[in-house]
Image (cartoon, rainbow, N blue to C red; front, side):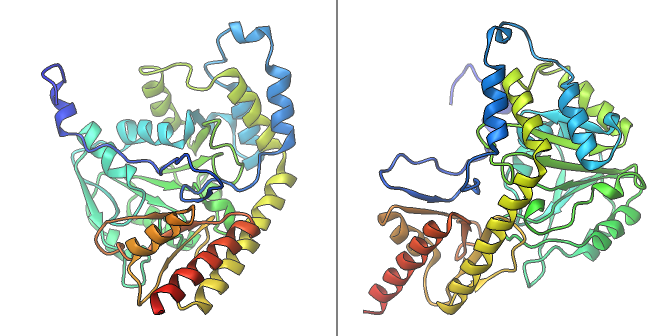
Length: 356
């Protein structure tokens, strides 16, 4: 606390990002990063752009990147907005499209940045409980609201909605913006982007941090009809007109255009996820049906916090949340096959030790 703080600072509960520990021989399965490096074309593009043009400001509209995104998703370029990671895009979305008199709705167990944005911008919100199977209950969103945000797949559960369910929400709330946060959609879920043409209240937010292996580059984007994009642009240009540097823009273009690399890498992670799910199940874990690059699992006879601590002692880091309802669950990022095997061996050792 400080007497120099503005009043709002005292009331904030900031987001706590996943730990980035400095440990030797670490197996890091806690922040949903891609276990493989980005497309070689990304590295090549960044190297080619590392020259004396860095003295110049980047294109504030990121037109070339927006064009690449529009081409990849078969939408008009005026339907695209880009920002410094999907977190910045979401920040502008919350402030520019979801801040109304009626409450914003989102799941009670979901991306923990959502309530942080609400606190920062003074947005009234209501959380909607997941159902008994940890899925999003679409019927529970049939209530008055100022907007809805649904991650698809949800995090940390990994469970995905179908497009028919998203269409139901859109039809139920034609006067409210419905945001679909697709950070993990490339790992087996259906994208809602094709619905944008029919639904002026739909905004889809995506990131290159996960499936494109560019968490260190910080590029996110949104796709929606032009009036929604215009609101985000007005917010951006009242905050930071240059959110994406020159290297981020060229690297992101290369990633977007290398569709073969994306498809192959996503398929590798899906295969590893399926094998890890099977292995965990054979060890007695309950594993939710994931369509993300992580699994959410719990053991009926072992405390989640103790399991996470025991793995950490073996230099294996997974994500444990102390939140009610999910305190016994572990969110485990899909690593390489070797990393997943080391995790399974570590868990086997811990379970055997406890039995002994």
